[in-house]
Length: 136
Image (cartoon, rainbow, N blue to C red; front, side, top):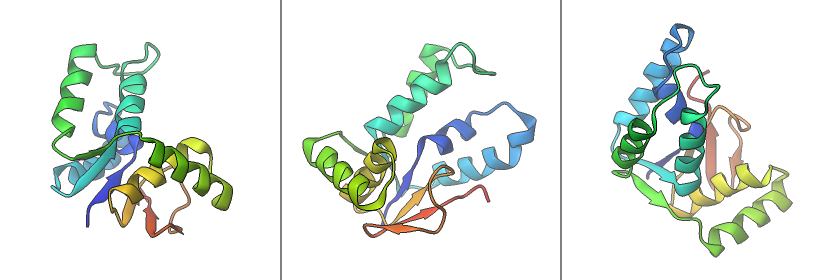
């Protein structure tokens, strides 16, 4: 089964911060696997965060675009009405923010059994997707 990668995995992969070297290595290891999955939402959030003016090590537009294009080798879930509806149901049932619920809905839509994220409830299973913090 594929595993879903949240935005923070992509951001750690480009981090120039020496204090995040271990997280960068873990992110790179996940990105080196062939069974990753992403969503359009994750790629959008990556671009916004990676290129923002206040980010240390800010990426230029062309480099960020190149990374996004490289990561489309993974299965990428579009934001569809089905994903939106599932996100709303997850939010109502489990109390996550809408954006976190949309990540979970996209992971579920792609048939992922694991979601790698630093931001969600580690170890929790939601709608058949287990949340794993790879940076612990």
